[in-house]
Length: 320
Image 1 (spheres, rainbow, N blue to C red):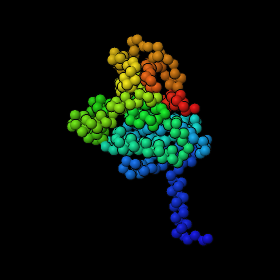
Image 2: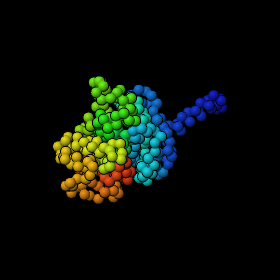
Image 3: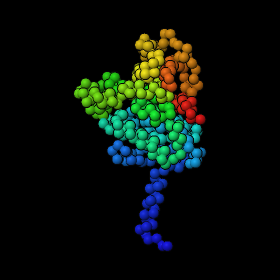
Image 4: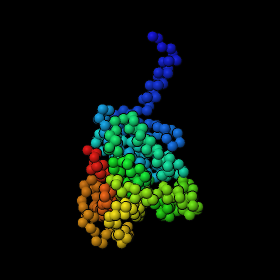
């Protein structure tokens, strides 16, 4: 049967549509999916491992961009390590930099992450029992928020130097770039109105972290952050304490928090767990505690994530 020119053109367009919505092994490719929250088309980057076999489901690592960044940010070390494990790497946009109401932990941004995962599961061989989440800074904020609000969605999560309390972070950065971004995204400064205060609460992980008590959530921060970086380590310490309280396990004491976050940045009487060595971090550890499946580590460093430690955490929780 001879096809008409129009039918040939239609076939070509359909083929292009299929190719643009899937990824090939070893390539970083932009994909789009429809938001189930507002129907908009949302982008993400997807990398299938070099050794990808569509007949064999593999783990999925969902990596989240930082506060001022968007889809075009790269974490090449994490990408490389994920590929070496033979896992799929997903990098959603979740409404971009936190400078508009639709971003900054909004319900739309949350749903974008869930929809990106659902799209990847539908299109590729993802092991649904091994779905991991990680991010640094603003990505750490969103990692904690997603682990707390959707605890059943993640096998394990790794949050680095994350913001847990937006109102407290605003107080540190009032009048600066970050403070201005929060005012734009959340409708004003804390105290401006009841609705504005609600936005700060509803987008702060600290409000919901008691719901993450059964999630293998690894919270980590460099001890110098807040001095040489933008997020004081109290955000990580208080986040862990919220989980510990829900688990009815020992909290990091107020005196300990004051010591480790103070000018000396050291515990006066470290516990045995605080003096461990962890090769995946490759840094001196100043504080390490656990509560249920959750863990916190304060390490020698600043405002940074350590990809080797994130991967090690995932491997510890089924990613083998």
